[in-house]
Image 1 (cartoon, rainbow, N blue to C red):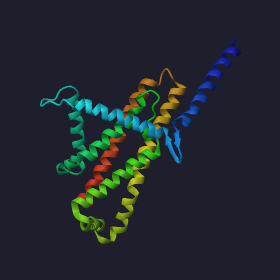
Image 2 (tube, helix red, strand yellow):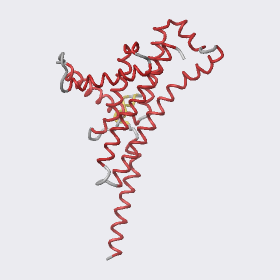
Image 3 (tube, one colour):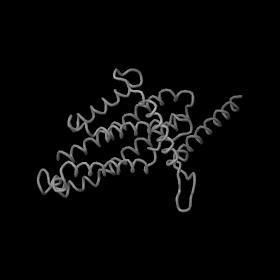
Image 4 (cartoon, rainbow, N blue to C red):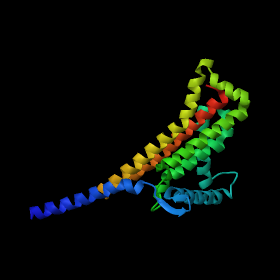
Length: 241
């Protein structure tokens, strides 16, 4: 009897370990469609689906705004105020005009990070190509804003602050920024999703609630960190080192 029970427990344990081992393969992107030389991956499909749903939701939620906010509108204004607080703490109140940049990054990354609540959906931010696209786009926008605010000559001059001998280091720092943003967001989100997958495989009856709560918290925190860094880069580009 004991041998039979032990064999069943071992079989269950082996099955759980096998499921945990398959978690990594499940998280990796794969080709969904190939059109000639163009490969459309699962990340691209997921991202476009999320964007379409997101744009529709924003349209529906903002088409009937009232002077006195209530309900969903009140929540949306709380999100905007939170984004203002990010800007105020890094650039100052004069930087509130950059809300479309900082706010869009925060909200979009939160939506991407939490998209795993959609059945069968993997967050696009667990793919390094997505985080790289976000990081490179952010840095390009930062450079454009810096040139627009200071002019090309003033923008190039800020690399020599506080002293001209710091120019090489400042240039290297600028080149490293997209890699830093890419790796930080990717590693945190991929590691979190992998841990969640393993916990669900090993402890399916215990893990869900606390892991889901932790996933929501981490998704918001990672979006916040990315947005704070983007705002700080804007501050440097417009106000100097």
